[in-house]
Length: 90
Image 1 (cartoon, rainbow, N blue to C red):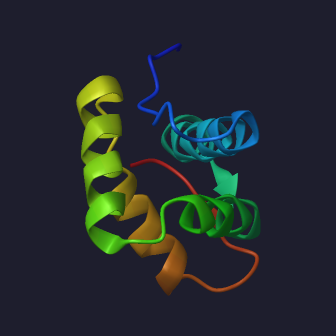
Image 2: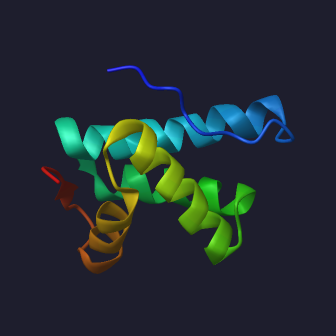
């Protein structure tokens, strides 16, 4: 599916692309599954762009409102799972 991804127009083009890749990783976890390491890399880059916890929550909420997919349980699961795990079916 295609969504209007929540972005900050003050971000650079590369930052926007990287945040969209993170959102696509969340979609992948919901729809067909994503390797923990792949999502971990996407999340690390997202946190370089959005380092604050409050800002992260706001962007997660905006993505949830747009897509119906909540990044929070996916990220929580990613942090708790072992290397080699596949995140799927949220």
